[in-house]
Image (cartoon, rainbow, N blue to C red; front, side, top):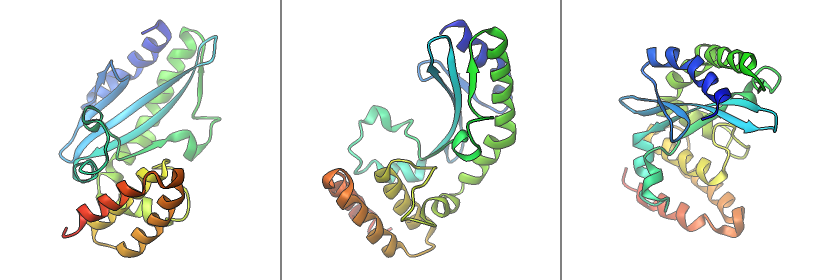
Length: 207
């Protein structure tokens, strides 16, 4: 890790450790194990030649949802353990001006680290508390199933997590959601994901 990244990470590390997070160097993120799964706090560094643009993602892995999803996902087992159930790039919610940071030297790296600490306190803590509840995941993903969702950008993942969370929370029109998402899967990537989606729906029968 170069010195600019290291400065950013070290600036936020003590605060996150006090909340039970630890830094995972091979992934470049902080994580915290919870009863329901895992919370992630992910600084993202984009090389811009003379430094980095730094943004921040918060995410969760919800065991109940991921255990069901990976019965039919086809995703490599090694990747399943840290597969995000839900996530948010904070700049998508609040805009790039105050949530994307340019780092080109040690002072700007320290400033970016302090800003990431503020984002954690102001937004990330509430994000983890809100979406540790499967019913809130259901609401976020399925309240407008025809519209894109900033918490789950890939349509196949949104559809899959959406139907699982709807089934588990037992609220709303599950059959109607399945129909809407199935139509989307028919047109996505020439129907590539439709067999996986149908297999998931079959696996959820009887829950």
